[in-house]
Length: 81
Ligand SMILES: [Zn+2]
Image 1 (tube, rainbow, N blue to C red):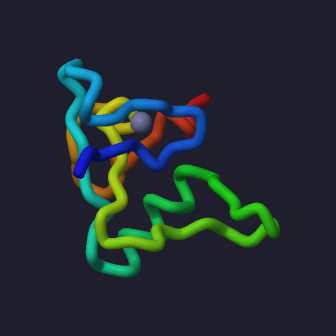
Image 2: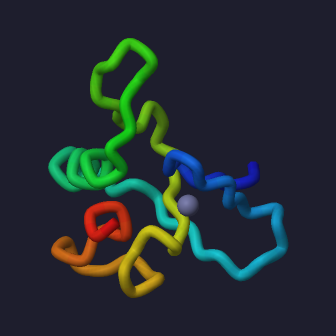
């Protein structure tokens, strides 16, 4: 199954053939919610979005280092923009 990025406005997916890394949302609920918060994604009913599936990915473009990093580096192009 192709991986696709859960970030709003990001169309990256694993079928592009570009070298983009994908990272699964963490299993730990605390980390999952940190990732979800950083995405600032909301559901159509206005509630905070959270990954519905175990197989929800973010691509490396949303990590400061380009790779999955320690928690303080999580995502964060969004925060700095
Ligand atoms: Zn992405």
